[in-house]
Length: 308
Ligand code: CP
Image 1: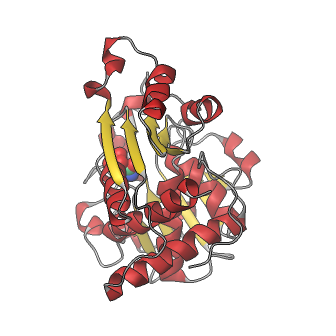
Image 2 (image 1 turned 90 degrees about the vertical axis):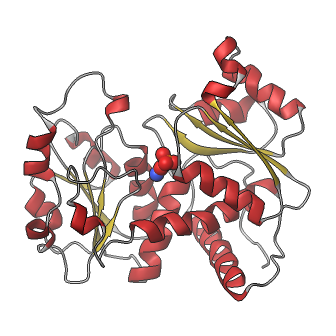
Image 3 (image 1 turned 120 degrees about the vertical axis):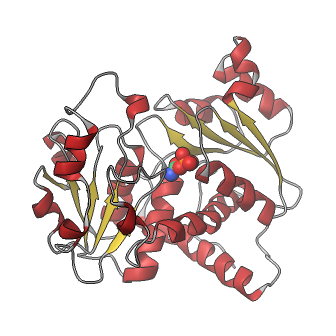
């Protein structure tokens, strides 16, 4: 596929990505998906490139999908996780990245608990940096695979009501999605307890509500988020049981959605907390399709950033 309209070597977030750039990623991901379904040879590949995954926080989906994506494009891939790196011996993130660059990496995929760490690295090293989640700031590849999946199922997102329900305050997935979804014309509603969904988010153009019925009624899709205990220093609601009782998605509440509305979740899911287990496995759920689409989305990101 001939690539037009991509001039970045790093992907740090969706806030500053244009609608055209998002569509370029989707077109390439779509072409990879079609070529792989046909069993054809991938022309836009990364043969001879070295991709380093630097994951300083736990991950299953993102880490494995980036590994499979790099291998599918014939790149060499090396994964370093926090507890197996020399960061545990006092090395700084900056020195770690400089050493990975000196070892000949062609791109570094970074997950880190500090918001802005991929941006910081992009300023001090010359190889492409791909943000795989930085604290509660952004998780661009996750939002891209979410939006790609929504578009596959719903067609154009213009005017579609997409509700994101749960722990918005600490969610990098919510932040990346609100930028990306709005760029593609969707109407985004953020919902959950007032302690986890500040009204301040209205400044970003979205609807904010603390009434779950209002959030769900006539929605074309709902994306559930888990409570991110690892980023919270204090309790934001009395108990998980109370959270589930007031904000958990169950079949009664799901009946408020549009008839064929989709249920999404970036994972990991906490069954019986933010989502009823049967709903997670229901026909409406596209949770595992999101995961599978994560491979071609990350292939497109790696190719575009590594070849610019
Ligand atoms: N959605 C997501 O980022 O999952 P992992 O933490 O397993 O990568």
